[in-house]
Amino acid sequence: MKHPIIILAIFLAALPLCAQDDLMDMLEAEEPTENYRVGPTWKTMKLVNLHSTSMVKKNGLDFRVTHRFGSIGEKSGGGVHNLYGLDISDDIRISFDYGITEDLQIGIGRSKYAELIDGNVKYKILAQKERKVPLTLVILGNMAITPQKANDARYDDWQNRLSYFSQLIIARKFGERLSFELAPSILYRNLALKTTDGAGVNAEDENANISLGIGGRFMITKRVGLIMDYLYTFSEYRSNYRPVNFYDPFGVGVEIETGGHVFHITLTNAAGIVENNFIPNTTANWGDGGMKLGFNISRVFQF
Image (cartoon, one colour):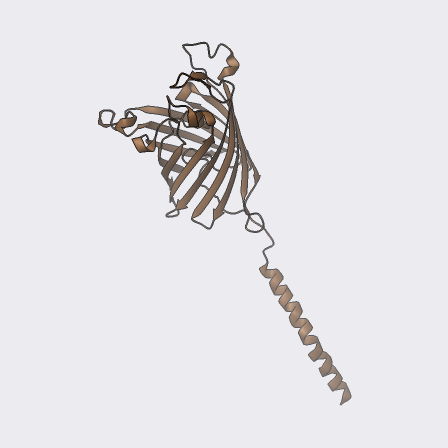
């Protein structure tokens, strides 16, 4: 009888160990082996004025047309006689952006405002993931040149036509509906004009403009969302110069995805579409009806 008792005792002692091994196997099976990137934070590369962290896919070409009408309010030059700004075109931009890799793209565009021609590079440093990586980081840089004619000698030195823009975009997707971003940036223009303020005091614009942008999107449905962005520029010149009042660019809009297109309908007080134009030159005020209706259409071709 001793042998069966010993065998039973050994079996009972081994049960907890087997149960522990089974539990560990279950926990390891439940722990995901892959740490996938979070689904797209944004549907397209821009909100209203600000860039997003969205990128063109590898071997993809994003063709984009962006249109900005004139101010709606009569105090800001709009009103019934120009159909609340619809007869006016403050800016039109046509652009092409190509994805070299999933995290690197290049682009070129031409704007009506200042006849600006710009080339840009966008690179994703970090992508938000399901575990341990809570943010997406993207750097954006562009160089732009204006070929427009001037009635004075400002462009006698051709380098005065150049401007440069750099931005770090920090974004996070909160669930399926809400996305948010911060965008510190610096714009450098080779030309800084000297002017005279209302008191007859000489004033000189800054070559460098440091700014901070915020943007967000809330999805109403899977294909329709609300977008907004705001950009504050740290500029003593823009705060104190009185003959012309400068304002921070602020925009709201509706984003609609329709098959291969992403369509935006926007309202903003910024006349220019590219940062090199709207950061230093926004002079329309929402309070005076300075908001401008705009839209953009994006079509992606995959090669």
